[in-house]
Length: 344
Image (tube, rainbow, N blue to C red; front, side):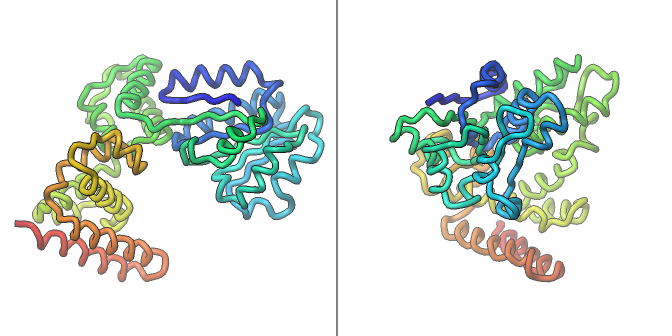
């Protein structure tokens, strides 16, 4: 059983090259665990290109399943048992495979895989909780390999940004780098998409500053939402209402972010004060950077308030798909007023 751990871009490059070098001897199942989707997608694209030397062969032998609705005519296992078209193997990719079907189906397949297919299974969970990993440890069968993408830290994203800029013969100021990290989801795919826009927009300019990115990156366009969020969490009435008036998107679109903030504060509250951020992050699955940023709000809310706000936000989130927009806006405005009423 082969296990690879990916902590950063350098780790990923080494593991990818290892798999490409054994493209004719890949294991029947490859499980990609963790939440770094960009690395996963890059891995799949590289494996697909290496397995099939033409687009037609790829189309005939490459199947992707995002959910159960993609398996109307045949299940992934049924497809795996069919002979490939002018190729040694089929490539079958399944996203969120533990939610796709009963997990025992894939465990049974792991025990006796098809000789005609390579399965790549995606899961956002970490490797220790993966059912196939547990079965592989118990059975010791060499039918699967595992690549676990651990949660990236802030320094990993700093390295990514600087490396990307260096490849494009550019430098980025510290302020601009911080601006990207503070106003963009800490996800390799999102950040790399923004970096591509930044380099394209800046043309021949060698030094990237905040003024060069504030009007077009997806993170920057949502920067007002983050400003609104900080003002609301700080219970700053004047700033909160001022930002709400000028938001490009309506304030209630920030509900998932606000909910994440209160959940983060909830965990910071219930863990002993001596517990370090890394331990809380590993236990809860919340990014360390988010926890660090929200630590300043811990003493601003009682535990009872936090539980109440999480409950109310969950209710409003359900209204988004079942109630008219004006009802959602009214409920959200009342929620905002309730928080700000508590300010001194």
